[in-house]
Amino acid sequence: MNAKMNAKDRMSVARRILGLAMILMGIIGTVAQFAKGGALRTNFGPSLAYAAAAQAGTEMPRVESTKAETRAVTGTLDATFRGILAQAEKPEWVGYSVDQTAGERSVCCGNWSDEGGCGTCRLEKDRDATGGTTHAEGSIKLEGARRLIVLFRLEAKQVDRIRVASEDCTLDAGGLPFIWLTGVKPAESVALLTTYVQGAEFERHEHHNIGHGALTAIALHADASADRAMESFVSPQQREELRRQAAFWLGATRGKEGLNALERMAKNDPSSDVRAHVTFALSVSHEPGATEEMIHMAHDDSSSHVRGQALFWLAQKAGKKAVGTITGAIENDPDTDVKRKAVFALSQLPKDEGVPKLIEVAQTNRNPEVRKQAMFWLGQSNDPRALEFFEKVLTK
Image 1 (cartoon, rainbow, N blue to C red):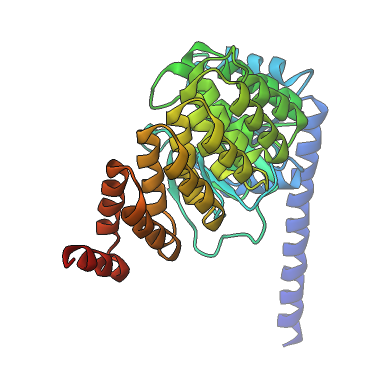
Image 2 (cartoon, helix red, strand yellow):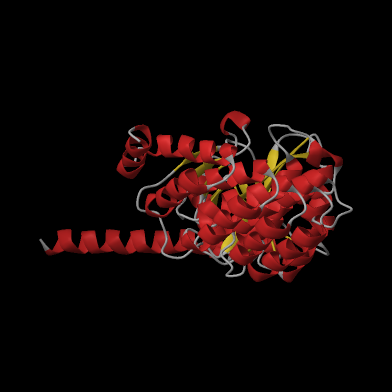
C-alpha cells in the first residue's frame, strides 16, 4: 500500500515539475523574441491569442477566427499605419483602441446604440456595411464601454473599410490576419481618420463608405482633437453631405461642444437643407439648450422647410414644452405649408396633449386648409374624443 502511495506521489511531483518546466520555457521563448525586436505573434488559435494579448497588456479585444499579432506604434501612428498598408497585398484587419465618449452606448460593427450590450461582430459577414452581429444574452454592462475599437480592412495596399466597435464586443475576423496596434495617441488617430473623411470617396453612395466610417470613429473619440475636427467638418466651405452627416454626430455624441457647434450652424449655414438636418441633430442631443434652439429655429429661420422640420422634431422630443411653439406657428406663421406641418406636429404629441389642440384648431382656425388638416389627423387618431367631436359637427 505504501509503495503504491509513494509511486502516486512521485508521479504527481513529476507532473508538477513538467508543467512548471513548460511554463518556464514559454516565458524564456517570449523574452527572447522581444529581445530580438520581434513582434509578439499569437498563432495558436483564437482563445490563446486573446489570452496572450491580455497578459502582455495590449488591451486587445477578444478576436476569433484569426492569427493575431500585436505591434507597438513606432514614431507616429500615420507612419506605422502607412508602413503596414504598403505591404498589405492580401486582405487583413488592423485595429487599435482609444478612449470613447461618455455615455451608456454600445457600438457593434458600426451599429450605434444607447441601449448597450454587444455580442459577436462578424467583420467579414456578407461584406455588408455594418457586418453581422450576434448579441449575447446577459452581456449588457451597467456602464458603457470605456474604450472604442477602431478597425481598418486593408487589401491591395488600400483601405477598403473602416469600422468601430465597443471594447466589450467579440470580433470575428473571418479567417483573415489581425494586427493590433498599441501606444496609439488619440490626436494621431483623429488626424489619420480625417484624411479619409476629407477624401473624394465621402460623396460616394457605396456599400462600404470609408468616409462615413471614419467620421463615425472620430465622433466617438473622447479627445479635444475630435471636437476640433468635427467643427471643421461643418464649416460652410465643406461639402453639404459632410456637413449634414457631421451635424448628426455633433448632436448625438459631442455634448456641450456639439451643441455650441449646432447653434452656430443654425445661424450661419447657408443651406436650408443642412439647417433642416440641424433640427434633427438637436432632437437627439441630451444637452438642456437643444430644445430652446429648436424653438428658436421654428420661430425665426428664414426657410419654411426648416421651420416645418423644427416643428416636427420638437413634437418628437419636447412634448408639453413644444405645444406653445407649434400652436403659435399654426396661428402666426405666414406660410400655409408651415401651418400644415405644425398641425401634423400636433398629431405627433402624446394624445392627451395633441388631440385637444387638434380639436381646438379644427373648431376655431380661420384657415380652411388648416382646419381640414386638423380634421384629417383627428380621423387618424382613433381617439374617442375625436369621434365625439365629429358626431357634434355632423349632427348640427
